[in-house]
Length: 174
Image (tube, rainbow, N blue to C red; front, side, top):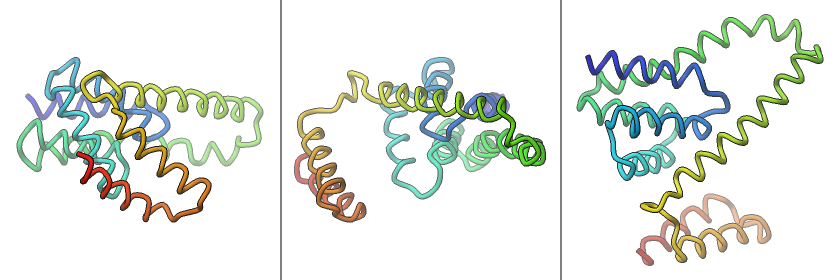
């Protein structure tokens, strides 16, 4: 039964989200933490952090980790990953041909402009969701962020170097 619930949950997440993994984080949290209580808020935040560190899209990585965590085996991870990818695959197959035919249409352009705005809102929602009281960003984190921002934006330090520096700073500060 858990495999079916996992498949159905991630199939819904895959069908009703646009804009990638960060945009789907709030729906994933709603389903996995709030509705099914498969994870605590803290566990979910940890899985999001791990998903960000590993190569690949965050939505797929989090589906894999959560599927494994919920079922305790690789089959659960595979089911969740397959379910979250299936809708995108099907939708892309169905609309790819139509898009090339209608991409210059003003209504299609308007719909994509609206979707871009919605995605920005979903990403902002995910950011606010990750900043709950339990995981709220402290002064040390803000300082690390500010230094990395200045180094990357104004001093043109390579992003990989800033990631390494931020990790080392976090290691010493925490």
